Image (tube, rainbow, N blue to C red; front, top):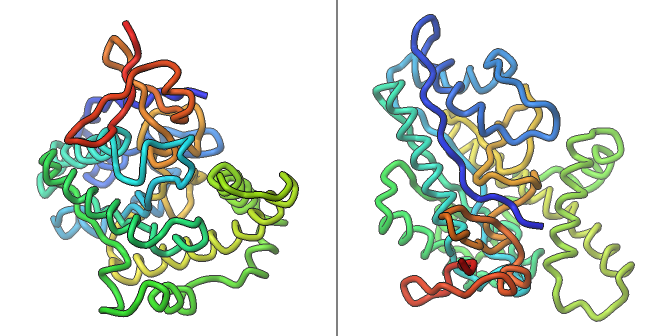
Length: 317
């Protein structure tokens, strides 16, 4: 199913009658990724206002942390390879422009820390650490090349020194992850956890391209792995909170109004779970773009190579 992959930044809200934190949150609200009804009322997001005011009251640049940009899907029917491409370029550009807009309504400005989480669960999704390293290195090169001066990066290489990735994963999991029994209980009673569990399970099923058993066996296997992925993701989020306690906590996953994290759309998409690392971009003749699986995109357009690597598909006129 195709998705539009461009976001238009709305004009900054007027400053009259609102404090800086409310104005900043007003810029984020049009891109709130939520599973329920979105609300334009900043008062419905008291935790985000509290987080932002830690900076505005001190007249300091606002720091936003976003776990995401882990690695490309291992399914070659979905993506062009294991390195960033046009999908990452579009979404990183949007995030940088969003920070620039915050600087227009709040003079100290804003910075966003992209907290790449691929290493924390790479073994569970069957992506080798060397591919995750290559993706992260290419992501940083893309940020430099595009001049995205409001973005920085953080990943598992920044913690626990020179230990192996396996050792680092274990340390972070032991320190921060909830037990699988706790997660299973939450999935039975908490709607948001249930939705996350189903979404992760779906991705794991889609991304397992070489399974030789039955479809039902694959689904059972992925349901079990989904709990582990969620546990590790939560551990990563808590590590980020410890390393960057004064930050506005964003999420690529849908979040209800009032949640501790603010779900943000990287790209316009009909599917609340769509991300550039699970899809390929198809550029339209008029300049627009859609996200879709590679297998579909290659039927509709020609491959475009940028900097010597597959970048996206371009539809015929």
